[in-house]
Length: 390
Image (cartoon, rainbow, N blue to C red; front, side, top):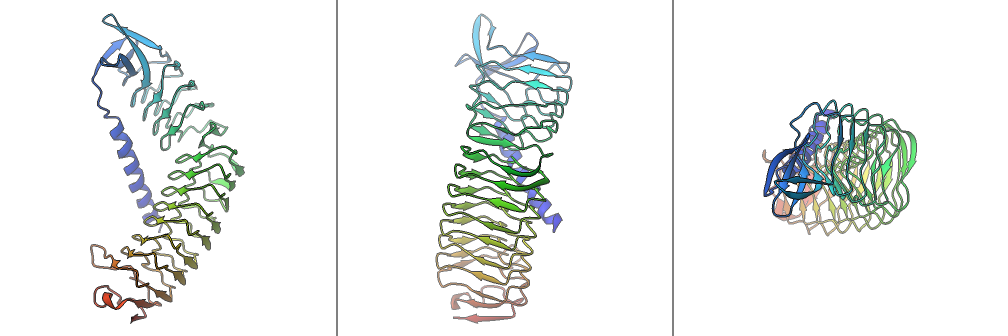
């Protein structure tokens, strides 16, 4: 089980990393030059510059200027480019000017001696892994101007002892945090990976101001047993609560429309989940390996039961499928060994098979399955206890 969950995590992480790595290939009409101790990408069309990948490994204290001059022309410094200070292991202090509006992916990754950096008001976005493994960084605040933060931006910043958030985004809770936590009212987004690997987090209260929970936000919070979600929430991201191994029950509030891929995968003590009819999408593997889950009522707004959505839910005995559902993905209920009855409504027009020809019901030896007549001979039901066509 853990192997399959690890594979899912690796696949999703790879997708995220690939996506953000592509952002490093931004198409600029630029000229890369060395000015003083720093390298810059100069955009000759807009007379703007970003700090580029540094060629000097020995940088220790850096003060980035608001503008630079090259060949008699002044360029406004508006950003810190992708991997600009990546692996500058001697770097201890960076001062960023107010002219900067973005900090790109991997910008300060693996700067293991960085102890001070300011993020000025005016910065709008901070990229994925921007401060990954800045293990000596003890304090960081983000201004209210920031509205986008990437995935695992602060992962490995183990000496930061305080939560990082602004008026809109909750970005990071130190993994060393222990006990319950109340997200400040007014926050609208729980960022991707914000609580990831907070293994001693036990309870979390999310206010009504929060509209989205990002990818992997609570992934790996192994002692988290109570989650209070509020009306106002609209989406739960991919693998948001994956492997929260102590979570036993969850009420998803009315208004939520989207439950992401693997959102609750590996929550192996989850016994009960309530989903409102506002939900229109449940992603692939959303509840796979929820070993203790016993019953599920799929919301009326859902049109597709995706691939492996409930696979390996070995205690699942009852599933109610509404007439809004038109398709069922391969392995959707595979290895639900306790599932004893399931009626597929006549609204279902498509049942998918995997590359081996297996349908949604493999490994369901106790299942009495009711299927529309049109699927007779089309779907592999050999593992079911009995099949009734209507």
